[in-house]
Image (cartoon, rainbow, N blue to C red; front, side):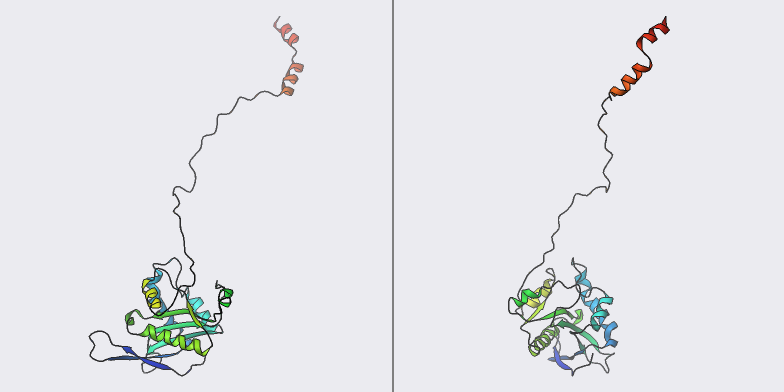
Amino acid sequence: MAEESTTSTKLASKPGAKSSDGPEVRVRRIHRRDLNRVWEFLKLCFRDVNRETVEYQRPRSKKRFLEVYEEEGIVQLLFEIAGHDDESAEIVGYAECAVEITGTDNWMNERYFENRDMRPLFVEELAVHPGYQGQGIGSFLLEQLEHLARVRGCTHLVLEVAENNKNALRFYRARSFQKLDAAIFMAKRVQTGDELLPPRKLKKARPRKPADGATKARSKTVPPKAREKDVE
């Protein structure tokens, strides 16, 4: 993936800071050499969220993350506080998006958007370093994605967020995101017990009647008169 020219913005200062300007954050496309660092960054960002959700928030696995890099049509952007080179720069944000629905395990329904005259930019991933939240990085990420959507002729940003991720929901709603549809996970408690049922007593067996054929056979073998003679 060829790197495009980078853009940058100033972070907002933390409360109590003397300077009105924080460090500069630049955005660039990801390189192969970044993959391991970015994977560790994403694990850090989603660690707490994934402990509380039914469905894993992305990324699901490192294998899948590495596969995404090789796929066509997916844009992966890094947001960094610059160092003297790429290796020393600190990753503070990551964004991943696509104009078309990608992935063999994706359940998105294209007709939903076509029927509403929507041409979405699908935001597959959006992550901000926990230690830099509240300093404008999330806004910078969304501003970059909106710019990319306009350049590529898209009309909407579409993303998925866990319903119990309250901080993320507040962030998106404050920036005019609206709920499209919802897949709600439902559960019912099942009465628990042993896997195998307890022993069960059978019903009392009824006395069996001898078959007619067996009675007749006995009669022919030992006639009543013959038995009387033997007694005499």
